Length: 173
Ligand SMILES: Cc1cc2nc3c(=O)[nH]c(=O)nc-3n(C[C@H](O)[C@H](O)[C@H](O)COP(=O)(O)O)c2cc1C
Image 1 (cartoon, rainbow, N blue to C red):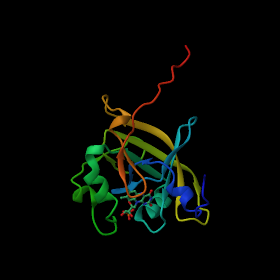
Image 2: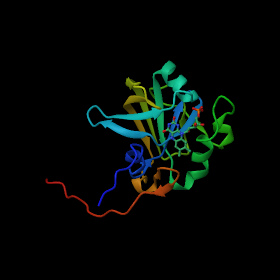
Image 3: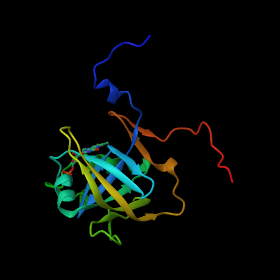
Image 4: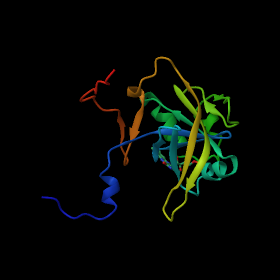
């Protein structure tokens, strides 16, 4: 039997989301409000709380980097998710190396196995807690041996590894 719950439970009941490190200019912000938006053109979207420096920077620069940390980089994720770039340089604080992009002028993170360069193509600002930015993927930098299993998940107040594969769908050739 299902019981009626408060509306917010509809969000809490969701499984974990991928953790990414959003870079704009020389700032890094941890985000779990993250999803793909479109396959063609390839777009992703990230939800940013307006008070965060990252929101101000994306509104100005119209671009962002998405860097995928591994489950071994939990410390970095926690630093970049608890300190504002208004107060500290997070590259220095987390011991990270800025990497130049090809299309965006914002920094990427050398230590992350995947870095994605995005240009903002749309934004959603509808009453809620987060302002969503849709970014079209222009360039991807990835380590050859990267697999999705290395990524890190979060929701709510729990960090997790990527789960087991239950079934692999064979594509028709
Ligand atoms: C695991 C985790 C996930 C987070 N997800 C988001 C998110 O999706 N959007 C957001 O705006 N803030 C999120 N935060 C909070 C920001 O990372 C945090 O407020 C940060 O200090 C803001 O940095 P900034 O002011 O330099 O932009 C998250 C924090 C953690 C630890």
